[in-house]
Image 1 (cartoon, rainbow, N blue to C red):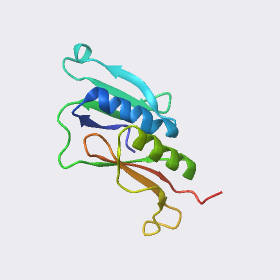
Image 2: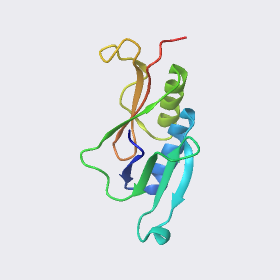
Image 3: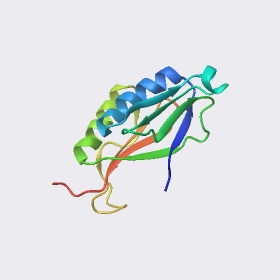
Length: 129
């Protein structure tokens, strides 16, 4: 089981604002922030659903090639809200919300590029209720 993961971001403030907006519909929020003074160089923000952050962004050179991270959504409506929030926060469309039956019959996802080009996805595996 993965405990936490993260990405390096070229513009910490811009990426923090993007992820705050994009992940809010999934119940994620900033749960911890660390300054370079506290850590000896790392500036970061940990996002998650309380009580613990499981996704981190940190100031630094972005990954090349960009990476893909998928966040689980509880409903298709959450996927739709993620997409709208991420696009509204400056994300670039990389796949509108919809079924992806080539993965499985109930795979409903949306894909957005973050400010550094990473492919960020929200996915719901549940059938429509």
